[in-house]
Length: 238
Image (cartoon, rainbow, N blue to C red; front, top):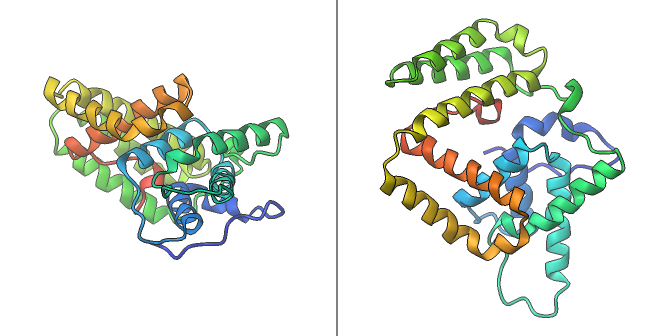
């Protein structure tokens, strides 16, 4: 993992370049806010970040929300429990995202504002590896072919990295839909049971829509892991 970077200054736009490091940026910022580098994000945390990313919550809103949540926590006279999940920051993150939207100051990935911080060769290697992994699995040949087609025109696609990522995310959704049909009832039960166990302390902090998005993201991640499916999105370039 890369070294922690300073949190974004609202008077600078350098943070845009870190957009495709969304997960790493948030993980490192949360560790700094918590005051420990020993913290490991849970499957729920990763799923929550993915649901925020997919719903267009700006990276800056997440980082500001984390700071606001910890400021509020530290202001309490009694702090009997550590903050052990990014889910604790949900309400603060949503508030920051709404404030940015209201002020029309949210710097999102919309409109081609963001550039991918990795070379074409790295993107092509990522896609080629994913296509090969899918081609080796039964039932994913069509998706593998689609990834190959994108890889062959990767330079053209990278002219708009967000649109490229949307294409890849759509293929991931299709991949997850296929995989879900292959889950046993017991597998799905255990995944939902794990989700409920991790989510229970934070359920009251989320709206029904947020809970629905989080559930989808959590179960999709579990399905990818269960069937050893490769991630296609640019956010998962190693």
